[in-house]
Image 1 (tube, one colour):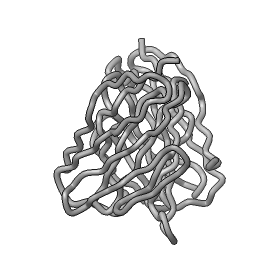
Image 2: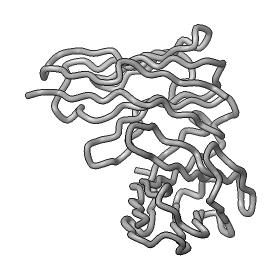
Image 3: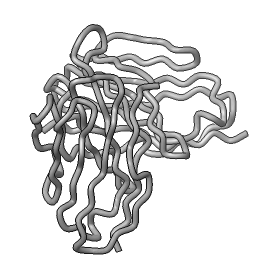
Length: 109
Length: 115
């Protein structure tokens, strides 16, 4: 099956800093999502991005499907950005989705 | 927010007892999923459903069964709970039409402790 690797595993930022989170996957995919799990455990959809680039406020994401990676950019980080960021991929049209282990982000005030 | 609820939200049970978790959606989405999340891991797929009475196994299906008798409800059953099934269980839904088809939305989770 597909292997998903996220980096870095942990990240500590000062409020206002920018960061880039990476997701590498081992096979071609037709589904890719980024999620934020907040400190209360809720999973929040950030991007559905099997290819291309999207932006939503301070967050943007790029997936280069041919090179099997996706990047999540967080600009001007805020303490509310803290939590775990997951990349999830599938090559079966959304079934049998595989999650990465996540990047744990802590933003200091 | 997608209309997904899970019940119960918390449960403590003893080893060997049966447990059923419920996922209910109000979005009329075709696909429903059950995942478990353990410390240090991302989410792992247990079972999924692609329609009423249509289900299939995921990555970690041993010890679990599912049923879907109505579009809106997807049940996860642990026939005889074990301590290794202590986890947080998430339900997800996705549609199959239009832009973003198969984008998954998650419920709030159920924390299950097996003692």
